Amino acid sequence: MSMHKISVNDREIVCESGETVLEACLREKIDIPYGCRQGACQSCMVRSLQGAPPLAAQDGLKEVLRHQNHFLACLCYPQQDMAISINPPAEFFTEATVIEKSLLNAETLQLTLQCKESMDYYAGQFVNLKRADGLTRSYSIANNRLHANKLSFHIRRLAGGRFSEWAHQELNVGDKLEVSDPQGLCYYLPTSQENNLLLIGTGSGLAPLAGIVSEALHHGHKGAIHLFHGSREMDGLYWIAEMQELAGQYPNFHYTPCISRGDAPDGVARGRANDVAMTLLPSLKGWRLYLCGHPDMVHQTKRQAFLHGAALQDIHADAFHVASATLD
Amino acid sequence: MSETTATLYEQLGGEAAVNAAVDIFYRKVLSDYRINRFFDNTDMDKQAAKQKSFLTMAFGGPNNYSGADMRQAHAHLVKKLGLDDSHFDAVVENLAATLQELNVPQELINQVAAIAESTRNDVLDR
Image 1 (tube, rainbow over the protein chains, first blue to last red):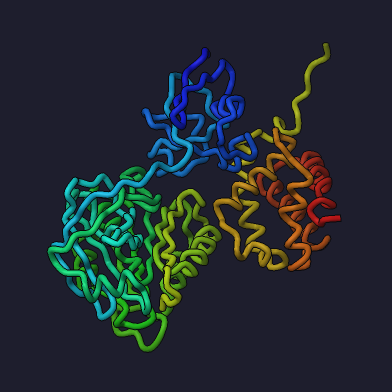
Image 2: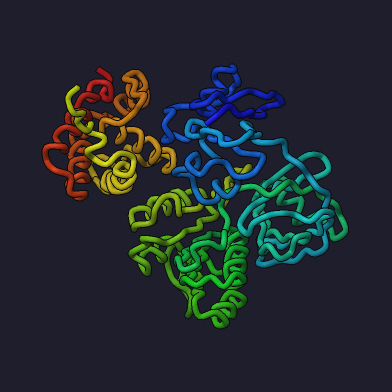
C-alpha cells in the first residue's frame, strides 16, 4: 500500500499508507459525518466520482448503492487516487415539454413529457418536476428504461395539493416543465434473475412498479414476479386490463388488484394489498421486494416482509410523503 | 511468549458471525410481544445497523461503545414508554436464543450475555 491523492470538496488531500479515507478526511479537518468507524452504522457513506471504489469498502451496502459507487469511508483503503463526493451533488434540471395528458381514473392523471436531453434513469426511480415559479414535487417514472427521452408520470389529484391540482386543471399539452436528474434507490437491476420479485403498491404507487415490471420482463427475468395493487375501492385502481393482459402474456408474471372496502368483483382480492400478498406468499426468503405508495403501508409492509423472511437489503421502498394533509 | 488465545470475537467467527446473527436476532425482537412496541416507529435499516453495532460489541469485537450514547438513545424509551428490567431481560433472552439457533457453545453464549449485561444500567438510565 502507498499514499494516494483524494479529491474531495474542491480540495486535494493525501491518504497515507494504512489510513482509511475517513481517517484522512478527519486528519485534514474535512467535514464528514461518521459514527462507529467499523462499517456498521453507515453514517460515513460517500460516493466515488471516478469509477468503482474498493469492493471491501462496500460491505453491507444495498446493491443499488454499490451500483452507484457509494462506499463507507471508514472501510476504504484507497488502491489508487480517488475523487469522492461527501454531500449529495447539486440538482440538475433539464427542460421538458408536455406531449400527452390523459386520465387513468377519476383522480389520477397520466402525464407524458418529452425531455430535451435523454435521461439516464432506472425503472422505479423518481424525478422532481419544477414549475416555472419554482414549485417542485417528486414523481416516480412510470415507464421502463427504453424510453430515454420520454417519461410518464401518474399524478394523483390531492385535495389542496398545489402541484397536483394545477397539473390536473391547468397544465396543457405543449407546456414546459423542468425535470431533475433521476433519484432514489427503489429500482430494478437485471441481476440475480432467478430471484422472485414481490411488488406492492397503493394508489399511484403503481407507476414505479409498472416501470419495474416492464423492465424486468424486458430483461427476461426468470423468477416469479408478483404485483399487488391496492386501493380502498374499485375507482382507485387503474390499468387492470393492461396488467391482466401482461399476466396472460408472461407466465411468470402474476397480478392481483386488491380493494380494502366494499364487495370485490371477480378477479379482485378483498383486503389491503400488503395483507393479501403476505397471506398468499408466507415465505419471502430470498425474494426481492419493491414497496411504493402510502407511507403507512410501506412502513408496515417492510416489517411484515422482514418477518416473513426477506433480507432487509432486498427490500426497496419508496414512501410517497405528500405536502398536503390528505392522501386518502 | 505464550501461545495467543483466540478472542471471544474470533471464537464466535468475527464479522461473518455478526452478519449471520443480526437478522435472526432482529426478527426475534420484532416478533416478541413483550418488547416489539418499542420498535414501532423506527427506521428498519438504521435499526438493523444499530443492532449490528450492538452485536459486534456483545461479541467482544471492535467497537466504540459509549455508555453515554447508549443512555441517550434509550432515555426517551425509559421516560415515555416505561422501558425497564423486564424488557432488558427479554432482549438478552432473544440474544441467547439467537446464538443457540446458530449452535454457539453455551460457554460462549454466557460470555456474550455477560457483556450485554454490562450495558444494563446505561440502557435503563440509572
